[in-house]
Length: 106
Picture 1 (cartoon, rainbow, N blue to C red):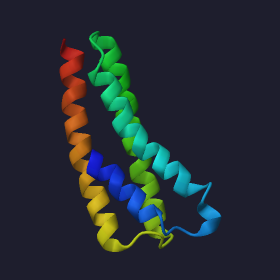
Picture 2 (spheres, rainbow, N blue to C red):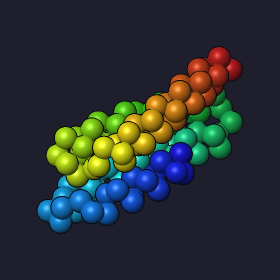
Picture 3 (cartoon, rainbow, N blue to C red):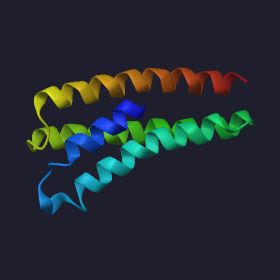
């Protein structure tokens, strides 16, 4: 997840200046929310709390994926970076889904 958010920040540095408080900010916040909600859920002991934070993390990941797609269609992101980000997001999504199901089974 750390590499994902680092890449999000890297590719969004060169977004148009009029997107500074628009999609650039939203992408960064959504991406950071993926890891922060995961960490907070991991630190919780009650399964219900874990589930809530993991679900929030998964939702932020889905939001990030759409924003990445949108930025790619607006030519803010290069094909190579788009492919890397989407592949990383898919891997993170699979991991989150596993953690979420594990927490639900406790």
